[in-house]
Length: 105
Image (cartoon, rainbow, N blue to C red; front, side):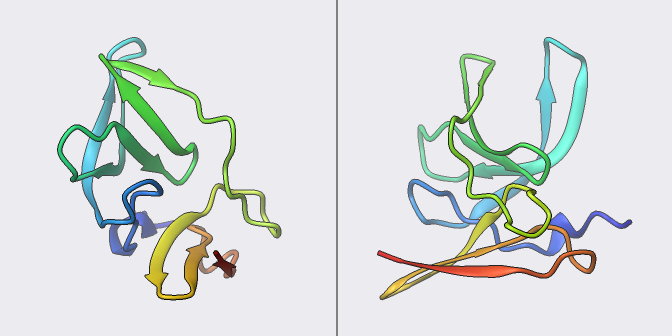
């Protein structure tokens, strides 16, 4: 399956701004993965389709206790759009799973 993350409009779940696509490097495991990072100065938020949202502080990955998971495939969803009356969260697994959920807040 192609890496569909490249076309996603992922937003930071804290700042609600567009995240930028980056290669995430995990020094402890010598592992690299395509993902997203918040562009706001000082923000530690990251997102990958497999892990969801998490923080990286001083090079250490902090696991997120809560993830907005897709009810169909259980994959961590991403914040795609922010509207006046709520947020649109989408599953990162098209075409296998096409699901979007509006959270009114």
